[in-house]
Image (cartoon, rainbow over all chains, first blue to last red; front, side):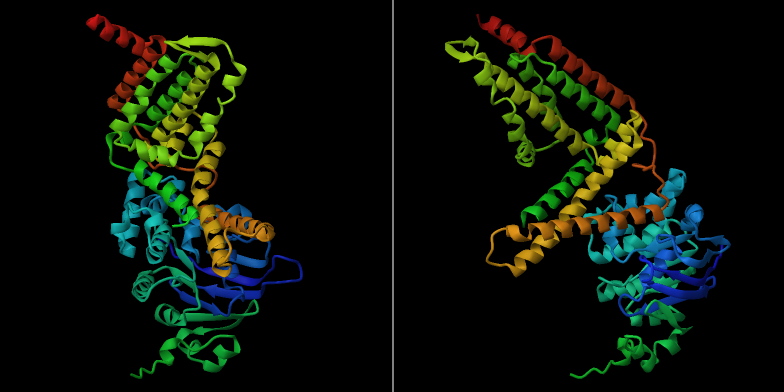
Length: 247
Length: 270
C-alpha cells in the first residue's frame, strides 16, 4: 500500500451560483491521519467528502490526492486509491450477495478471478464477517449491511478511506465492532459523523464545520471536550462526558 | 405483509431459487438461454389448429419442473397476473373464426380450437421463461446474453432494471406506509395526493438511482458490467443436455408424437 495524502486549497462549491455550500475550505491530511469531520446537519460534511472523490466537480480551488489533482480526467486513478462508504448502505450494495458486491470493484479493475477471491476473503476477514460471504444482501440486518459496505471498499485496498456516518443504524455491539475495525485501519481516514463518542474513539484529529466553513481543526481530545466551541457550532459534548448513572 | 412487501419478497425469493445448488441450476446459462429461445420459437411456430402437436411440447416444461425440483403450483401462483393476460389474447377467435369443426360427437367453431392454441402458446412461453429464471440467476442470464453478443448497454439495462425494481418498490412501500399511518381510516390512497406521491416517488427514485450509480463509479465501473467473475466453461454434460433437448423439441415438432403413441397404444388393444 502506497501512502498518500490529501491537499485541499481554497475550495468553494455550490450547486447554484451565489449559494455556496462549501466556502474557502483548506486542509491537509497526511498519510495515516485519522480525521473526524463534525458539524451540525447541513454544514457540508458529506459534500466535502464527495468532492474528494470527484462525485461533485465544478468547485473552485484545488484538491489533490497525492500528486493527482481531482479533475474529470483523473477520476479513475483517484477512485482506485479512495474507498468511500455511503451513509445509506442500501445505496452502496446493489449486487445479490455479499461476495458479488465485494468482488465488484476488483473485477472492474481487471484483476484475475483468483486474486478477486483472495481479496474478497481478506476483506471479509478484516471486517470479521466471513460467515456472511454468500448471504444475500436483502436478508441482512442494517449492521451487517454496513459491515459489508466497509468490506466492499477494503477489497480495493484503498490508501484513503472516507466514511459518511458509518455508525448510523448500528446497534451498540455493532458500533463497538465498527470502532475496533476503524482503529485497525492504517490508511488515512476521514470520518464524517454526528457520533462524537465514536470520533473520540477512532480519530486523533477533528475538524469542525459550520456554514460550509472549517471553524476548528485540532486534536480530537481538545476539540471535542471544548463545550463552548461545540455549542457555538450546534454540537454538544460527547455523551460520555454526561455519564452519571443513577439507579 | 402488504402487497408491495410481498412483491419485494417474491423477487428476492426468485433470486434464492435461482441460486440453489441443483444440477439444473449449474448447467451453462447459454445452454438454458438457447433452449428457452428455441423452445418458445418452436411453440409459436405451430399451426393454429394443431392443439395435439402443441400439447406434446409440454414435455419440456414438465421435465424441466421435475428435474429442477420446482413447484408447478408455486409457478402458477407467481404468474397469476401474467397468465390470464396471455390467455386473453385468443378470446376473440371464436367470434371471428366460425368455420364449423366436428370433434368426436361435438360440433364447435374452429375459432375455439385456435383460441386454445393461442392460449397454450402464450402460457407455454411464459412458463418456459419462468423455468429459465428459476434455474438461472439474472447475472448468469446477462452473461449468456453477452456471449451471444447482445449489446452491453442493453444487457446492463436489463440487469440494473431487475436490481432497481426492488429499490423502487421499497420506496413505494415506505411512502404508502407513511401515508397509511397518518390516514388510518382510508382504504388506499386518496386521488388528491396521487400527484404529489408520484412526484415524491420519482424524485426519491432518481436520488436513489443516482447514489447507486455513484457507488458503482466509485468502485471502478466504466460501462462494462462484470456479471460473473470467471468464464463459465461449457462442459460435455451441458452440450449433451442441449443436444438431447434439441432432439426432443425437433422430434415433437415434426412428428405428432402424442398421436403416434395413441395409435400404438390403441393398436395394441384392438
